[in-house]
Image (cartoon, rainbow, N blue to C red; front, side, top):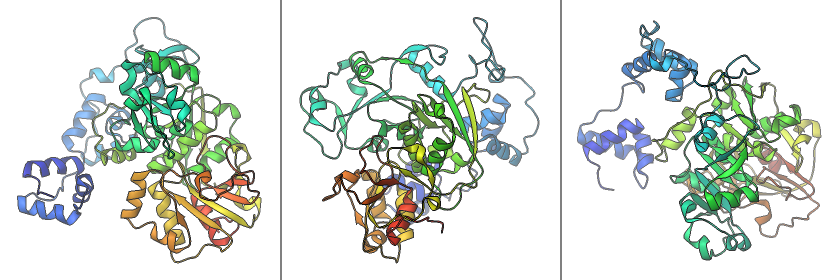
Length: 509
């Protein structure tokens, strides 16, 4: 690759900060050491100044005068911004009251919420996104509105769906066709639209950015809400309306907040969190509600774990499950070149239809009978199930880079049971290439596992009988009930540990 100019290197350093991240952004054969060589040739010193300057922190503090609001602008928590403020010795309250520090209330007499605040003016992130897309100041739960989605995802994995598409010219640029692995030739109007083989491959492009509204007809796309979008599954009538007019009618769901606190034990993942929540919270929590996840546990989950959490939340009956924008989201999107977007946050005094706090410090790996999320129980309580014929790791809940890395480390230097077949399928092509680059697939193959192409599901495995009566362990990958009769759902660590033993076993044992 040709050496960048000094101005280009300075721009990259300002955006990505470190040589390693600059190399990742440039891609190709560019390494961290090559970027260091370029810097020395151009006389550019290593970036040693802090991420946020004193001027930036002071300007935000003078403008907002509140740690929560200031942190929200930078994607930090309230405590995170407070730490930066203390670092620069900024302790006094702003002397002059700014416009951003005032809370105006105009119009008719506002209604009071259950917690004694004005719900018209303190809103959740979901309500703000819907208000933006409906071009009205305020949306209320259970009220009918007409919204304009920013993106429309259509599953056309079978030929019949692609041939019946009726898309208006005015919305064609918003439509993305998800063709699936078994891609059929697209005819007629469908051939003119943008297509992607996998939903998560959209993240590599310019389509998925925070605070947009996505309408989709396949609930596996619910995992996209991990990027702080609002991804709603629509029925056939709503989809037809959206494709014809660019808008569709929607009854605004109420918003429920679930705060996850304390720390996760070793071997526990987002799958276990959601399984535990579904089994222990009232069923009404997941009945066509927006579910917002908050708390220190969510802040520590990587982006792939959040995809799992949001995907399973919608699969459990919620209108959408989403995580708010933070530093983890920003870093993930920045690596893919997404830096220019507007982010909506929930107000600190926003009204929630229900508000739950789950303490998960004692949570252990869970196992669920496929098709019934309420059947969740601890792996060690179910007892040993053997022999296990097939173990599948992949899909929206276990096909991410971090999950594959953990499975690879668990299997390194070991052999899976002779009575068990282990299959691993990356989430999408980008994840697959990343795993190859980092040599994460080699220990899995050496242990006796089989690497499937990206996007493969359990039923895609060559020679697999979907009507088998043998015991199957799988990580969740679909919202439907297309699992074998004797299939149990577990997290990827439990699945890998069970493949080694040939029987259901707890990873933390």
